[in-house]
Length: 523
Image (cartoon, rainbow, N blue to C red; front, side):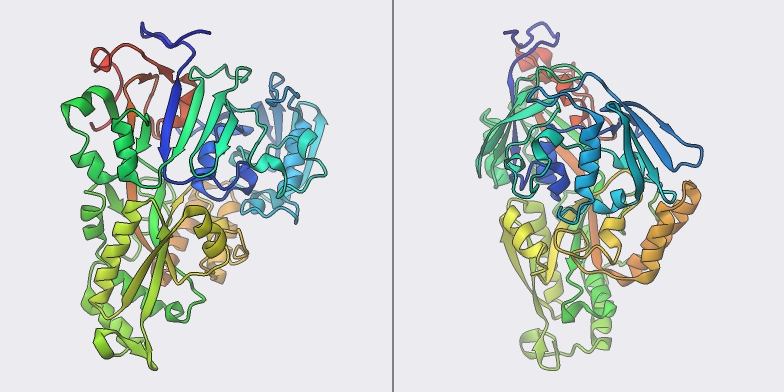
């Protein structure tokens, strides 16, 4: 077997161990609503198209495509050299089957809506897939990523929610699942027949370590090669001579934000004055300074700064506890025993839920807890294991408020998060937000190809959300990643470092000798 390179040239071999705080729920992308599941399944499955580092759309399983002059029909011309990892040839029937599965009433998926826009889907031959939309649908092309493609020969006639492929998938991506030991680790091995070329790294291991301090010690001990570090680790614990000799640090903006979300069915949060008061009582800049060590920016809505849908002019909520107290009084909350506000004898006490293994969210919750206490609101904090948090509390709406984050797509369409029809179990509008004007604007934004009209719709949505505050939008964190220097071929871009993972390889010469030859960001 070829061995890792010692002369700076790529060769096959080696193992990459990534530390993660949570394991996946499922490994079929169509059923996965969480980032842990998508992180792993993204190395097992491909889509028809994908994003390039410059955010343009490029080929994946579809080597090319044609779009009709009216924008309603897309004809994908599929690659002919792709096989599922069980050896079966990939064809257009797999795409059609995946499409039919995702729109089925029997499939519990939060991604159904985009594909319900398709009027007809057909396979003129084994390597051609054509879809026609009934109305203009701006996100159409990019919706055909890795959510839909499924192996028809294994899943036809099978209940997708009960298939063994949930935990033992057959894909066509750069890696395939070897083992999954619940609560401990998942091991992927390279797909030697991957259509874009066998990945250089033979094994990719996701090691589940819920506590990031423990994970950081494992990184320094050589038991983990890659991890996302906390701001304090990035700022204070990664600048020793040993660390600089053995690890590279990467910092880049991400398409995500962290928020405090309210259960809008809870009587405490039905009045927007209460939600606005809570926003005024929270000092976002303090959170960014203390929790993020300045490695992030304040969030004002569901888009991140410097992206085309982002509206910089929406209503802001500067830290103003006196304004918070005034709004709470207007909403009927009066001084009560022990400094806790009451309304008709009911004390203002609620619980914030978040997930274990995320110290940023726990610290954010603690700061919010303290700040709200200053205006007469008692906050309890509860951290839950990731899959329990999602399946038993988020999906079933068993929460008062949550601290969570969204990883958002490159397109501006956020229909699945904000439309009033998307509140069922396993769907993304779990705070139960409903506004007819926002519903209409979401439709407007996805029904035109005119970027200025789309931008106007999304700007208005942000203005409404900034007033109604179903979330208190908290911050946009920077991605902070550390990788052992023995891994070469990493090329940081606007979409991060993982996009070219199959091209990474192991450098066996000493890190000291290799130092300085690899691109770094903000070391």
